[in-house]
Length: 475
Image (tube, rainbow, N blue to C red; front, top):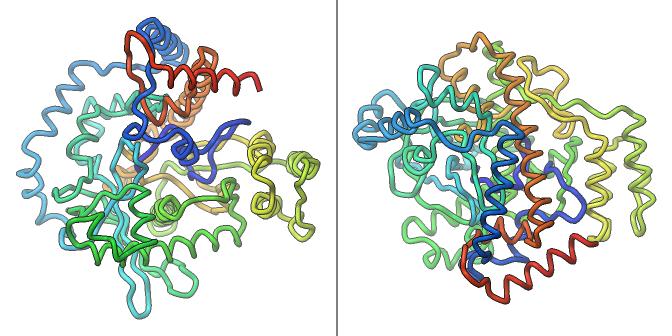
């Protein structure tokens, strides 16, 4: 999905929070967009401080900032004559260009690598999740593949990104922009109308043509006022408004079903557009890894999340119960995940981050493994893995390759360890950089959402931003 620095590799509803943090959507609402307020202004001295800090962190965590020239050259060569190459591929793939397809992302998203389609039939719902076919361009014989293994994932710092793969891929052949033919890897899921279980899963290479790129705000507007679709979109506006309504109804049901089955949902207040993408991507990830495990019986890069011990869960629940104005429903104590979900829905807003932090403190780290058993505790999935973001995560890139070739890399265990370690390094790097921004008087949320502009004399507005950040840090 289109990502921001706050995104978590398992689910946007299972993000790592620290006290005082806001979700990306909340931060956008508070700080405004770059279009509305313009970038945060800093002087040249501050810019040097930030650059020096980044270099220090990149050295500390072994994060390569620049790509070798041969990698950039290879990426440039692989993105030449795009349309001619796609035409050559059409006969070997499913041609889905006539299907209504669209992307939905935050306004500040950097990658547009996933799109969705939906069709409601008499006896089933068919959901298509289309992912940019990164492995068509990046395979084990390329320099870019070696770079992906070295980097492990894209690192998102406020107003600064260190990409896993050369940006030209995300800017061209792997960007599912409207009205352009693109190569994709499609997960086609036939869902039972009653219980939303998988009746059939098909995974195949395709050619798609997105009809629209929606921001979350535009998607919300389509849901609220479908009659204004023509103001939002130029083509297929009515059809897309109806499709958006259908996929929201499906996503809402999938979300509620997950909660009922015990999936931990740490952010109870989610807008509908975010929920649509989150649930569709979770459904696709789960479908792919179930297909790999049960239908093919092959190893893959599975996502395993151990559960806290009973004592650790008790510690978290007691801490939550003692918060002012918070009460865990009596009928929920037997299942800690359901207890947290129920409590978050009723708790005062001022206590949400404390509840989230109490849970996160006792949660073991999720990790990548070639064996799925143990499952994903937070999501309450027996088998789970990543597939929907191969442009920014090594795990997804590897799983795309395994799905396509039905062949497992000989060093899969080492690759799992590598991906786990690099994710941990990226998260710690991001955390320390945000702490540094606050130390020097900058609001990380404002910087993340609005970007930075270097000027001779920063204006008074951004001095106010710095003052506000100082006050937040002191609290």
